[in-house]
Length: 263
Image 1 (cartoon, rainbow, N blue to C red):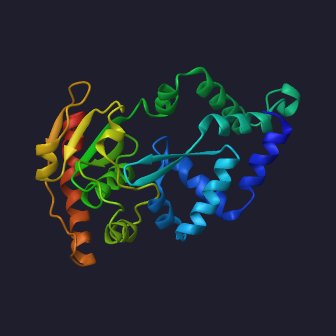
Image 2 (cartoon, rainbow, N blue to C red):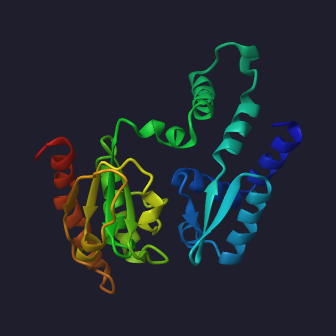
């Protein structure tokens, strides 16, 4: 990367809304987020979002891809790595410096040395990957994903997907999670095809339709079926009850299935 390219990328990030979008996409990972999920998470009008992601794309920091009726945006991680490497090149005259700087440099080198899929998953190899499947991937499976990552994040990495995903996560599902202090950044509906390349250790179906339509994965994967009430169209209190039911029944089931640990 040369100075002109670095300036263009830094200039694109030197704006509050674009920086918020970029950070959200970094957290979302390689799958990215659809436009609706970004707009909802950051409370942006569609036209405002389009303007800023176009700016990030021109700077070479963001990719856009079409999936069915939706546009998904994701970070160009090699470009991000190159920018970090440019900024830290010859740091401290090439001598060892602060541990954080050394860690960043090491992370960049590891990402460049590994194949793309391996680099993205290298930080997660110690944790089991749990896929939660539902039909619309807008409520129960999203809450399950967030709760698993919040409560069992040291042991598992949870993903969720749907056999017929809806355009957005239900507002009351987000509210129910936030009321309990559970992070909701990066939650968005996605088709099960988007996670087929993941090294999944356990599939959990949380509705009967998803159980019947559960796909065939590239390798044998253990499955458990744990249906929960669908609170769509009901008041927030119903979503809170489902949230608590997921925590009460799903967490011990996942621990027992993956680690043979019972409460």
